[in-house]
Image (cartoon, rainbow, N blue to C red; front, side):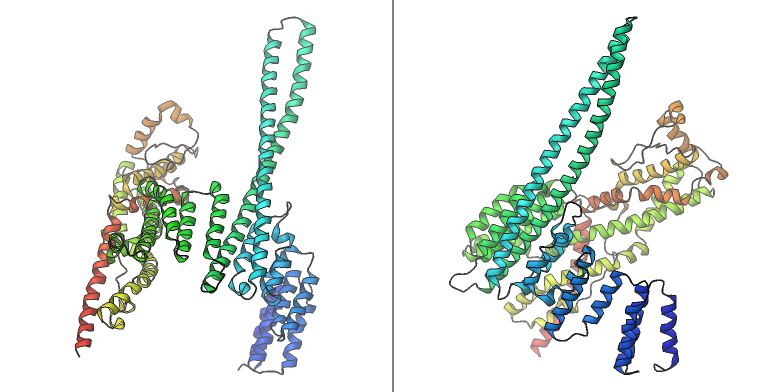
Length: 640
């Protein structure tokens, strides 16, 4: 069959249907490779078919580069590959976008020296005022890894030091330029304010000039001059705003490049220190710690507390590996208050993440105490971390966002279906709609739809959790003389449903969020019934939940409270209800999607609701039952 005319007809039809020469060239490559793979024609004939793509009319430069990449696969000798890459770069040296594409595909053929001397020196990677994409530099610096370090330690360290100096200077220059632009903008705004004030005073003088013709003419001329100057000043202000935005963008881009090179430098010192840990004059982990500290000093003013904590914890890990316990303790003390304040802040949606960071710090301090043979302190620090249920809780926050997403999607469908019932006359008033909607969402949240949406997220979370617990269980088995394979968590099957956890409406959303959703619905209905003016008729719910707009004539006459009560209790005719479209309801909710999901995350993370504790307890109980059965099986195996 493969040798029949059907294959040729199939590929010919695909070529005929392809809209561009680039797509035709790709199909010709697939066809030629197909013929070669199954030996349907001699290799020379297949090569001729593949070579024919070069003569396709309309083949773009990007298409030519793709063809070159395909031909490069057939080159075997390393020296020939390097020459081939040089040929491609020479042809597209004036096309920055294609150069970047060629670098990504081919720089490893040329080696790390090519990356250092050519790629990082390319203006398209370094950035220019006309075109500055820091993502290129960041991506290439991420690829600058251990494969580039081995056997080139002196060259790599010198290169990274020079890049640190260059990117830091670029950042400082950009920051200085931003300061100059900010000063220029302030001066321009002061000039505009001064001219407006002069213009206002001159108008006042003109009104008080009476019938003095000469004075009036002079004042009118003065007003004309001021208006001309004001136009120029406003133009200068607009230009200053644009210049400041460009300068701020340059600062941001320069900071991204500096962070990228510092991360590469930290990776380098870390890797080399471990590789030469026992040598006489090692490149110590303290150089990596110093690099993290330099990075933190420069970047922290532009970042938040989370960034400071993450960098400090990384330094703690490096200091522990370098056996500098004193530095570990100092670093832990430096972020203790920051972690504690953020973890205790109930208004901070990331409080649970800071709680996790506190546990990480606690683990490192426990390791230090163990190394110092302070076993009492080690036990005191470690004991809260040992029970399995605690470990379940460590990562439960990873489920909050998937749950929030699933609940939002479910609530949207519940709202749309309930509003449709109201439109058909199945619900008398908006007050009745409010009651029905609350019951409907409550039922849907406990239904199979939500559980099906969460199945994949919970399964992925459980897989990661099993890996974290496996090491602890293996160590326990070895200490107790139990074969670890009999107690492996790889054989554990945890129910991924939420049947054992009560996901109540109040826990998941709370009445504030429900009133906010109802506010959106009322805003949509009010806007439709009042002529599409976008009148927001509700003011309940958390800040940011209500779709606001300019007040209409009806509100001006009746007042907001009166109109709200009127619409809530009115039995609106079914024919009139048809103006409230499903798409309008969906758009109104979509505008509040992020706010609703954020509120759900906060509700789930709130210890008062107890959702996390119920979930971890339920899953831990399930795992505990299976572990007891595995322990009995292991006991029988050992006895036998």
